[in-house]
Length: 283
Figure (cartoon, rainbow, N blue to C red):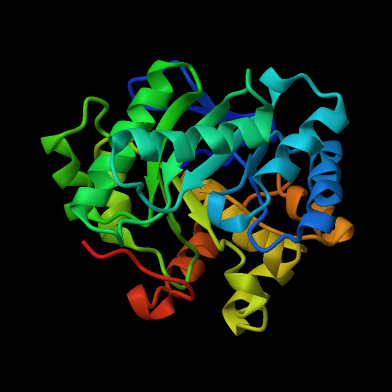
């Protein structure tokens, strides 16, 4: 478990890399294009320095535009995107990835982290996407590369073709109700940084009695408890909201800690893959 003394400015080093990633990220899944820029600007004003997009989200350009509008130096903001599917060969896949980088930062732009969004296309597709990302990294268009929704078999199979291994990051669904201990233990054992999407369980468990009990104990909201739980687990949570007040609230998680008893209560909520609301990985 990570030290409870965590700050908004904390960074985690990525494996075999000089890159460091902020401990708390801002997710923009399903953030509409006409709202996304303002949501990102609010997040940046609050203090977030890490935003997570994807080709599938259709708001990469808005993420980049928000950073430019904020006037915050580009080097102070960590931007992530994801490739959803492979092209017909490595070069075509690379071109798809490069197009994302250009949407975000223009012809001279870069991203900090580029992930494969899903292993669902199979090993051949994973190989094309990973080789394309390695090329993108070699050209300085992304600083780090990783995966999302990958189980152990997916990551192990990459050894056959990957120059960069292990992947720097694995972004998976994580919260007390689906703790995915097998893949988490594997990633921690190989130095792979774990990002937690849907850390708030999309508010579907806000009325869980145990969660409410812990929230009352620390005098915080259930959402703040869930984000703090991820942080103390050593994961990088990616809470998402387009509500300015909620964006601020979700960042207000650094002035309290969950004690061992609170953490144990939340650990006890685990339902394994049945507790996932999006998907648990296949190991």
